[in-house]
Image (cartoon, rainbow, N blue to C red):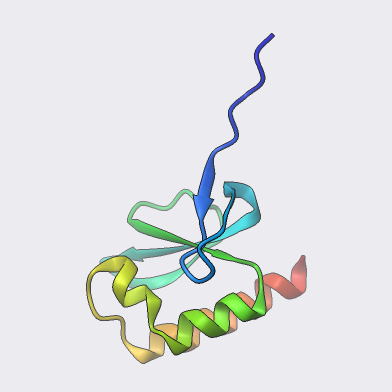
Length: 91
C-alpha cells in the first residue's frame, strides 16, 4: 500500500519547509487578517512556525504585507501576536 503524501508548506519568516500540520496558518479575508486555528477557512493563507523568533521577524519586517500583496494594518499584527501566544501556550 502506498504511503500518503504529507503536504509541505514554507514558513514566511524563516523560509523553512515543514509539514502543514506543524505550522500555523494566517488567513486574509474580507473581514481582516487573523490566525486560522482549523487551517480550512476560505481566503488567502500564509504559514508561520510556532516559534517566537519567527513571530518577531514577521512583525518587525511586516512580512504579511508581502505575502498578501497589500498593506496590513498594525492592529492586525498586534491581534496576531496575542492569538499566537494563546495558541502556543495551549500546545
